[in-house]
Length: 102
Image 1 (tube, rainbow, N blue to C red):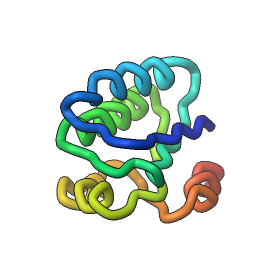
Image 2 (cartoon, rainbow, N blue to C red):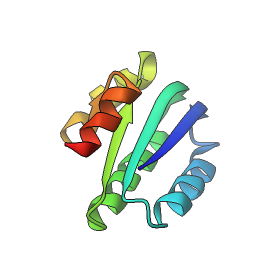
Image 3 (cartoon, one colour):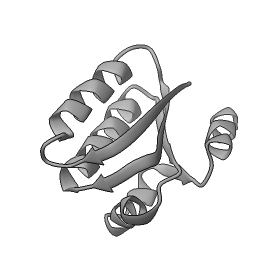
């Protein structure tokens, strides 16, 4: 399992870099990826696209993406687009990590 801690903002200015970095990591052999969004302060539609593309890529590889510790505006954005139906979300990193073993 790979844990990726994301901080700051993922907006139209930073989405390409975030996309490239995350996908370069995910394209390796890690099939179980946890995005810890505790320190992510802001997420636009461009950032949502990065997360959803990561989930899609992992799904195609028969892997899995989970998200934990999304709060505030980030949680609101994920809720608004119905990301819960595509990506399992958890309040704590421990719960998310435990769910990979289930």
